[in-house]
Length: 166
Image (cartoon, helix red, strand yellow):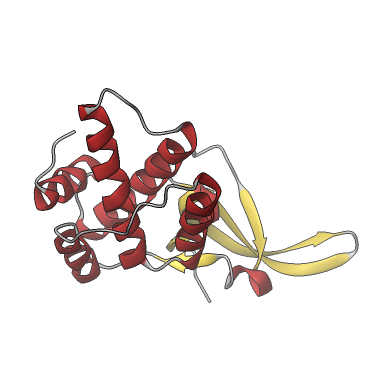
């Protein structure tokens, strides 16, 4: 069980701070809830029943894992899938799986494809760009917390490992 003050990854909200664990009653049912907010949206309060949170929360990576993930940016990534619906399905499955090494491989591919397209004076599709921005925002913020630095520093380290500049 998570505690007050813990940081977790919560679905599309990214890194969230658990403000408290408290009982609340809705429709005559009293349950224990996590009360949390995304760290980049202080005004948004989210309540998640404790008994269902384990399936939608992920712990943040630690410093050692973050360093290993940065080194992985020197790898190839995943193969690009030309069929848009198959590509979207693969992206969603990879993100929902939560395996950070798989997510880094996906991010590598998106960053390389963005760079390749830029040389051709093209852009990623809106959908591909949304995946790229979501992954970068969430993963780099998570790693920055673990390494006590900024997401921009993590991005610079990742791009250096890739021998890429955007």
